Length: 251
Ligand code: 13P
Image (cartoon, rainbow, N blue to C red; front, side, top):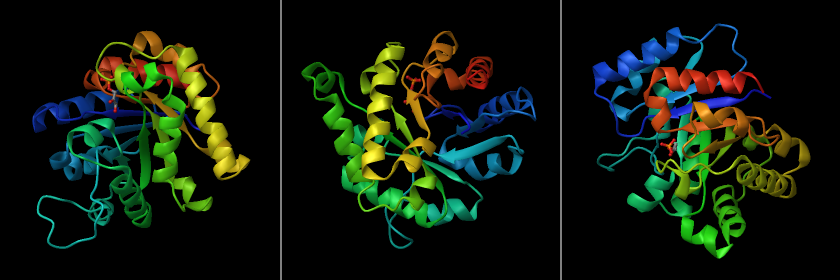
């Protein structure tokens, strides 16, 4: 199973800056990588960047709509992304759940829409500090996953990568320790085994996200159930992002 390192650029960079960053990342990747490398730039740049990303770099959208085409001003569908050769989409990021009212139901609808369009999904889950401190973090994550994956077949899970992103670690500089990450990732894999089957759970990549950077990536990726990372801030600097890719290559 290949590790994945995905850079979520969030709402950062103007077009010329984004192109420069993509080109720097692209030129730093060897052709023989065994890690899948993905960047998720802001939506207006997706089409132009996909055309120029080349073979080793894949492009993801940071979200998609839950609906099909129609009178939904401002939304873009997963089928539209697929028609632009975008093969990946991030769904259920905590910033969309918290800031844009994305419910567990909306996350499930988006996931189904994306898989129906043939996209691969980076499905985000993760608890707030309040939930962790109350000790309910495993229940919280289980609830998010069971909602998002409700009714999904084992075969359809081929298109799903899970990203565990504890909200208290996102953009705070406060990374989950490698033990905390491993503990939750192992919990998720066991849950996937019970919900689907062992082969499906073993084949599912589970990424860690939240203040992952060159100085801690190696230790995080060394954990048996951590199959790469979803990187925010450190993906905005090519050297840092490439160092994280190099860490994933070692494991
Ligand atoms: P940071 O790496 O900036 O903490 O962000 C993580 C994230 O939200 C990736 O989706």
